[in-house]
Amino acid sequence: MSSFSDLVKKSRSIRRFDATRSISRDTLLSLIDTARFAPTGANKQPLRFFPITDRDACDKLFPLLHWAMALPDWKGPTTDERPTAYIIILADTEIVPEQRIAMDVGIAAQTIALAAAEMDLGCCMLGAFKKDDVTSCLKLPEALVPELVIAIGAKGETVHLVEPRKGNDLRYYRDEQDAHCVPKRPLSELVFEQDIL
Image (cartoon, rainbow, N blue to C red):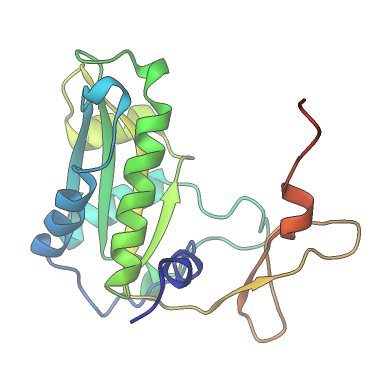
């Protein structure tokens, strides 16, 4: 059994999936069920989750998403590399105003991603998407606002955690073997301490 730290390292943004392997609605409901136990501000629980596993619905959603802006020469997943499921996290603005919901969205999304990693599934959290078009595509009522799209599927690529490149370059990239490389700052750069007495 892997440690929680191993699970966090395994939970990487996957941008190429194995489109031949479908994800069941029950799997998505299991991920959502796990996320519903995550903390929310003042325990208001203002998030709603829209699961999508239908192939036609996935195909309609796909062109509304922006993939890997740090890889400008990459056009995004090919037809054979597309995710086979999505969970769209929605803000119920009748409960909490949209501008006060970002932390709840982040906590829920990370919970879903970790639960998916435990199932050996890949996820990619997509904050760059055509919000109005997604709202229309999903036929959402006015009070439900799409905040984040989580693409889910069987992994179709390898991801490596690496040291930053020269000049502390933190942009992700593809190496010579076409593996996705994600630079991470060392712990020594992240810890800030000073005498507070």
